[in-house]
Amino acid sequence: MASRSAKTTSAPARHPLPAEPPRVGDTLAALRQARALSLDELSRLAGVSKSMLSQIERAQANPTVAVVWRLANALGVPLADLLHQAPAPQAPAIALIPAHATPALRSPDGLCELRILGPIELAGQFEWYALTVQPGGALESQAHEAGTREHLTVHSGALQVQAGDVQQKLQSGETARYAVDCQHSIRNPGKSVANAWLVVVHPA
Picture 1 (tube, one colour):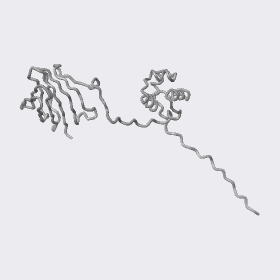
Picture 2 (cartoon, helix red, strand yellow):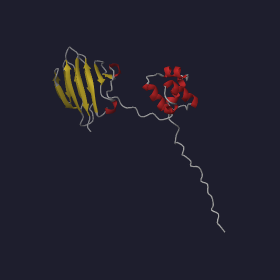
Picture 3 (cartoon, rainbow, N blue to C red):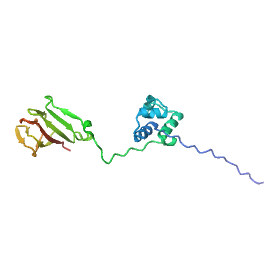
Picture 4 (spheres, rainbow, N blue to C red):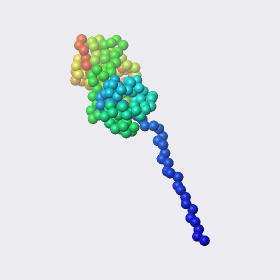
């Protein structure tokens, strides 16, 4: 008697669902900025409220398919492009910081200005400033951590540096290098404005 072979049916393969929904907000922000569009401009183009756009970009709202379709049309990209995470933006070959965007500090007497030229991520390691001291002005500082040094180059006028009990006067074109793990100051004893570059190097 012939044996009948049992037929087995395999269950359809299940594809795992993604761990989280697509980050439409990140992609939307990247595409909008790449096209130099403000939230107001994109709102008018897509017919989506500015507040909704802002919430989507900050991942505070999940847009419907209809909203994503409107945004894709307004941005001129396929719908699928908005459903994929935007690639990390590349750093520009040259990063330009406008003069008005350069932060500045002033001494309590208002006669010294430090324009912060170094990036914030290097603060506490390596800092450099454009220093302007009005006549009679003084930039007085407490001791930094052991091993910290300053490098001061005067490019107009004259300045006087004091580190601990030692003083040194600098003329235009001269540079002073000194330890600042003690009280120190930079003064303008002259009658004209002094300008200098100040570099602070902290120990590694």
